[in-house]
Image 1 (tube, rainbow, N blue to C red):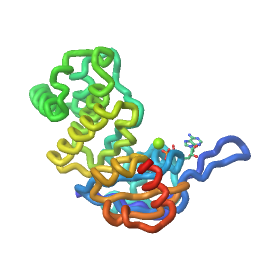
Image 2: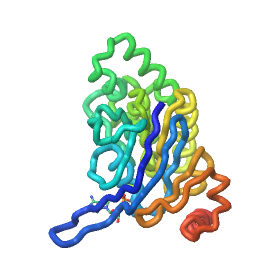
Image 3: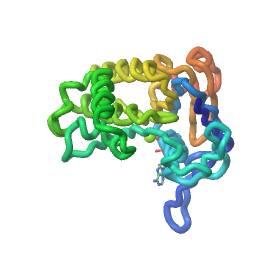
Length: 242
Ligand code: ADP
Ligand code: MG
């Protein structure tokens, strides 16, 4: 059971001594256990900043709780969140197997269980054939799925995906997304998935959270979002129709 409650948080970046950017403004949301939550909004509206605040990578004002406990009472390790960023970051000098196994190795898990778990997640994401290769010997689409495998193997409280397929072509994007959704369902994972595409959001989300200019302007089911009359939501729908 994991639930993240975001209550009125704000994030300010200090550009220099005088200038600041209010990237998140009084933002509230409830991300429920076992749900596929999608955060959507135009570029620069604060989606990545929201994830980084929840991950403990940047400070925020306001309250965030994980299962009712103030998130600042946990270390980032204790939160046990997994994060797949927009840019694929793999260790270049070790094999795909070792990249995926890393989170289990540092937890001291025995070798036999690690091999079983890596093989299973690799099969789920259709990257079994890559396991003995180094990252530079696999395609971009495969590399993104390796990064996803390394996150999903963590058995995390929540998985954060920040526009994970935006660097891929349409075919790799569709394939990666279908495999991700199937795997998420298999592991009953709780997810916050960031995108700027309303088509993507409505096709995968249990619940959609719409951000605009640092604020959370609407949340609801895909149907509720598609019939929403708020201008910021309508403009997202119009932008994707084109
Ligand atoms: P999104 O992920 O929705 O594209 P971001 O969270 O990356 O948006 O950015 C939100 C706002 O904060 C933007 O105006 C962006 O320029 C600004 N911003 C993001 N990261 C930094 C940073 N490290 N320093 C200063 N400003 C930043
Ligand atoms: Mg971003």
